[in-house]
Figure 1 (spheres, rainbow, N blue to C red):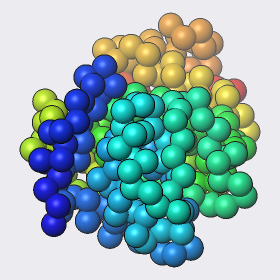
Figure 2 (tube, one colour):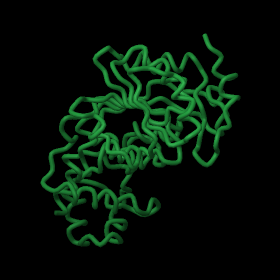
Figure 3 (cartoon, one colour):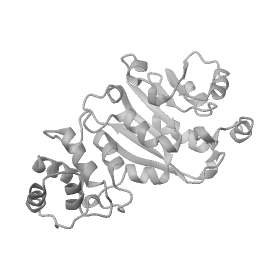
Length: 278
């Protein structure tokens, strides 16, 4: 087993890019196990860094497309010299994933800078009202390394702590079946981040979680409901410009307490609320 830590220390990591390289071989092998990679699979690896996961992925996959922003990391990746590795020097948020796929379905493996987790998820999944998102259309599964706190938000329900359940929860679960694969301690990375991490699996849904008459209106409803955490659902929606009488009537029809907060409603209840308000 190669000593990833020693190799990582040779590389000058960049704080501004949020670089923390995964150096724990057990976690790397868990990623490979959960991804269930076969010779038919095309893998999109986001943020491969110096290629510790990449060099394992290329052994099992038909092809690995590695999208990396850092020029120095690219030089390291090029040393792998694999025929089935395509390296793309670009920002993933500016990359059209559907174009990379060329008509194939991709599995995504990503160890991404934590400060752009939400934008990357929105880029991969599309927004809630983006029914025919081109990127999501070519992705089968996503295995994502995120901050543990973010992982808890992705898999939260209305029964979770209020801090965890919110817009990121609904976006993730609207388009994917989400689960936490395992927790990953900070020592698994170099340099060690200040927070613990978790590996999350997202299995893409063919259809959105809910059938609604107006998805943009639903998105507006949940945005309004979570805009001011300390306020009741009713007051949040009033502040967001919804009609007060309609809000009161909808809350009564759904047999909800009039002082309920948004984070106590399930995603299905939000769907019902949105239809009633409309």
